[in-house]
Length: 456
Image 1 (spheres, rainbow, N blue to C red):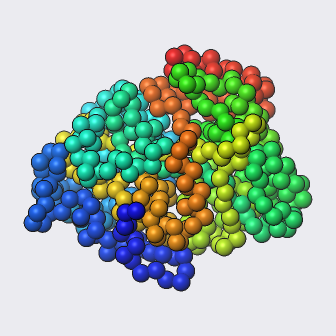
Image 2 (image 1 turned 90 degrees about the horizontal axis):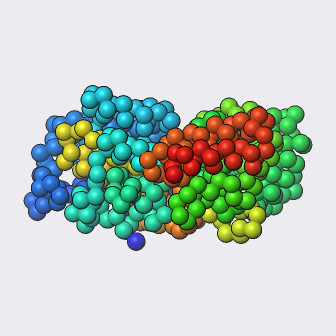
Image 3 (image 1 turned 90 degrees about the vertical axis):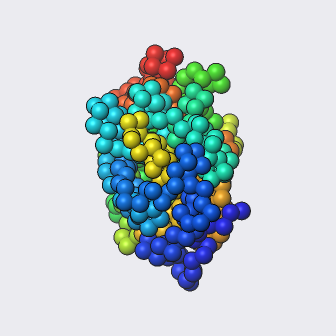
């Protein structure tokens, strides 16, 4: 097990492990991890560039709003490490891919690096908006350590048609959080193991406490692939389905796919209102105020539940793997909204960009971001950070459920056309939960037909 930078920091009696300011002490370890500038440094192994030459340069980075905390941390720490100013551009999570592609296709070439949704990599690569990193990763594997990335996310978050276009940054899998206090009020001693149990318990709580503003569950239902699409993907994984079959063809008319959509509709019926307007900000707000018993969310919600000033659920929550359904009895992670660092196709600072994303994805950085205060919004990307002493000690429940990402996780398609395919699915799901899309089978039949046209 690699020794993370955070294990060098003092730990107090509370779970407020470290502050962003306090993490400045990891600079020396990050320097070693990224290739030092002192005597004995070999510089950039792939480009034969001395990292000391980066001092005084600027780098432009594009990230999403929920990565603002992590972006600020990376900016500060990379400045200490290399003397480089990182110019941050922050955009909504559903605009990052189009923003990067437009920047590159227009010739503006403002951005050097970006951290888009992994599903968009195939379209970005096809448009020439991001660079092929295969040769560099192979040449620099001693420092990048690709074998350390969590196996089930490394290929989906980087590999397109046999070539690597990115490095995993934010693992971003969903798990099921539950409010112990609410469950106790209703005599419920264990969280649901199946999606049917989840709906039944949610209904029981909503029926009893809706007049008090308390609901059985919050469902991310806003019409976005990363929000509503994530809620469906969680159920698709639980029922043992897949987006594509073993031959790579769309598989959205399978029994598991239909059952997942039916359960989503049933879940919405008991949810915090209004599901169609619930994004992660609204859902998280309801959770922090103690207004919902269950919420499917990224694992870093546990960090926020303990550390956020507006959280009323500190020490009152639990977390388990996502429920199962149908004939499937094995919990399975869903790679709902993972993000990868990429290098913009038109950048003239490729050596600097490589050095930065190597730093931004290494063990020491990921380990520090996992336990940062305020929370960074980052989930594990590496086996070593997932198993780090600090993460295991401070958030053992999160560490345990995150181990489900090590094998068998459900990934979205990442090939050319995947972005559009995700939008088509989300459009039909939005109609379905609004009662306008006919039956689940009819809605998914339309999606299947469109996916066959888009993905082949």
